[in-house]
Amino acid sequence: MSISELKVAIKSLPANEVAQLTDWLVDYQARAWDKQLEEDLESGKLDKLLDEVDLEYEAGLAKAL
Image (cartoon, rainbow, N blue to C red; front, side, top):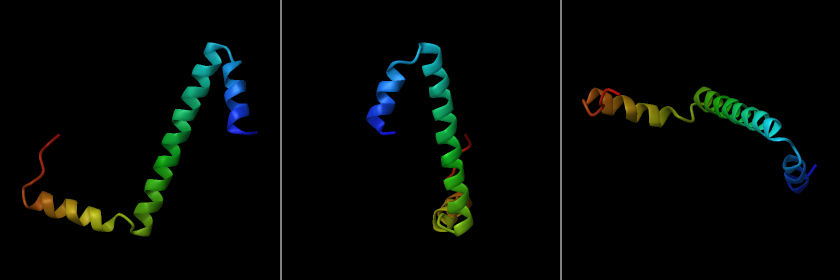
């Protein structure tokens, strides 16, 4: 199914089903983000950035949230 076909199908849904679809998409996207972040952490892709954060924290440049 193409994006264009999906758009047409979504437009034909009642409002409550569009809301359910929206909730599902938000959850799906959040899970995909979490998975990517986990993979990046495991692969060491974020090590340099995390090292920079540690140095800034140790230098007293961090502020409590």
